[in-house]
Length: 374
Image (tube, rainbow, N blue to C red; front, side):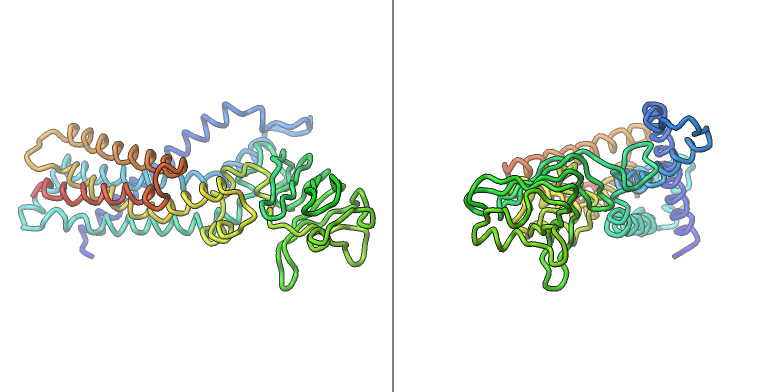
């Protein structure tokens, strides 16, 4: 890598870092002022310092989700800014006069884009799944184990419906849990199994996944279980507690239309293969997996489109070039969103929905490559 390559790469990362700090700073200021009341508690002893610490803690974790959201967009905008600065400062003309092609200048930018894509992958696969509870916490919650409202969920294998009053995502705990056992699959007569709390227990060894119910009502001996129900509803060996075998997890009981976005790809694939989930939920998750897999290619293609559109041959208006480039990339983004939406609606096949923008975008990048300034 030459000295000029390092100069371009440094400028690219500099623009990306400034863009992220500026956009996230605007988000923090707007969100903090709009929701300032939610950060305040009823404790009269809480001062300004405690409030600022609570806000800092909240927005520290939100920065990782924000990076996953705007990282691809900033990578493309940084590319446009780098080549626009090259054109504006006339740095590109001595390079072209020396016989160096414009696409040779794209090499450090492509390497910088690949580095950002690696950072996005590490953030999505390793960091976000480990801080999912903090990302879903409400503003002003000092305790990670804060309680959330419950959305009832059904196990589509056993038809057991799970609900309750509140839940804690980090503790995998549901308060005032209710398990509706279906007739005649699990019980001989309609039965609602209530408990003071239910704790999700992951599978381990020969033990299946399920929920441990504390202080259940009715007791295990009073349950009119069928043969299949006796295999699904078990008595704890050393207490009066009851263990219900089901693959329904805690994240399905809260924001299940978006909570899977905080999971790693391997966790998503395991969930997709699980028959306990409904087809609508599985389809949304399959679309999201394809969207994740296609995103690095879409970012790289957008960068390859941005370079010739910013440095168009026989065009002397940099502002016009940037405007046309923005409109072109906006059209590609709109196409990807429409395609993904049709995939969720089952209008087109899921895999095709995610990869149509890649095919069309790659074709456009190859066609536009001849328009770059030489």
